[in-house]
Length: 121
Ligand SMILES: [Zn+2]
Image (cartoon, rainbow, N blue to C red; front, side):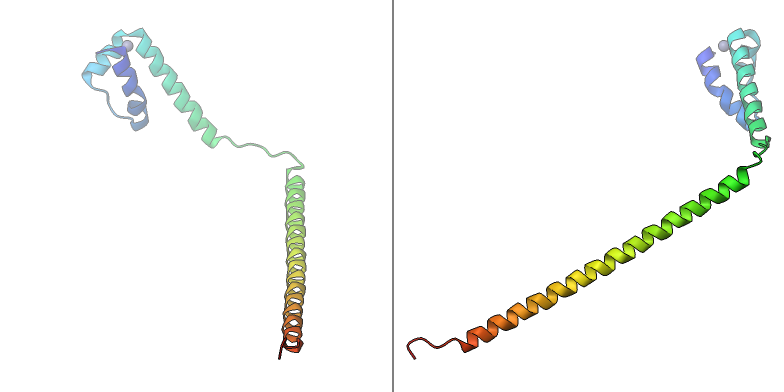
């Protein structure tokens, strides 16, 4: 068995906690390179496990900073929604004015057509 083959099996063996085959075991016992890799994998797994359980002490002002950030984010959202609401009202007003202007122009145009004298009549 070659080192590449054994090293490809090491992570799965350690993660699953399974028993390696006799071939793999014999290779590891006689190969310093694979033994070193095995030690490295085990150390990495142990460190990852420690990271999972490590408790980080929050700084004394962490709560106040978090609350300030939340408050600022809420304010920005409120201002944004207010601006969006005003913009919509403005667009609705402009749209209404355009409709009124178009209707007036149409009515005036129809009236002037009716009043126009018939040529040659
Ligand atoms: Zn090897």
